[in-house]
Length: 212
Image (cartoon, rainbow, N blue to C red):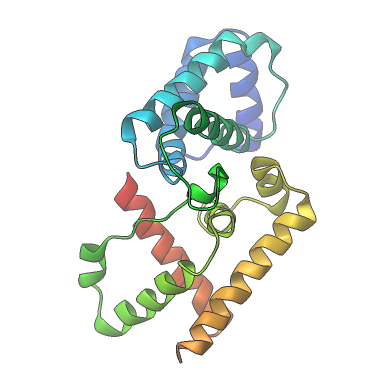
């Protein structure tokens, strides 16, 4: 995804708010794929995901003059699409959840078995352990890990997107990493934390590519 400097983001957002259609189109094309991949973690319904993204951008355009100034367009859009997806799932009742109607339990990763087969055997086994460890996490932990280690969101941005306190976001990720480390130890596959994080980034990339 193209990078936009903080200064350019502020200018781009200001131009969009003033009705600049080219600025609006640039925001859409810059962030569509990242929003699609993130929103797809809440539902496998591709049409629903696309509809929600389109609805979000229509709503942004209609309400552009009343929007606040931003430092990060990406953070704002991630929070917005998260809320849009959860509202759509409530309204359309697309998913039946195991523990009542907590829609935030739907966040899931999808991994490509074919992509793993091309790796060397050792790396394949190591990455498989990471996938198994990820599957030990709650959906909220998965979402926080995804935002932190793939999209490189700050704890402050994660807290805002997921509507948590900053300390809660930090604790959520810290606990997720402890759960993963414990699973790796119990499966007799202990790894140094820097190795875990490196493999985690690779595994999340595979999940992102598969969803794109």
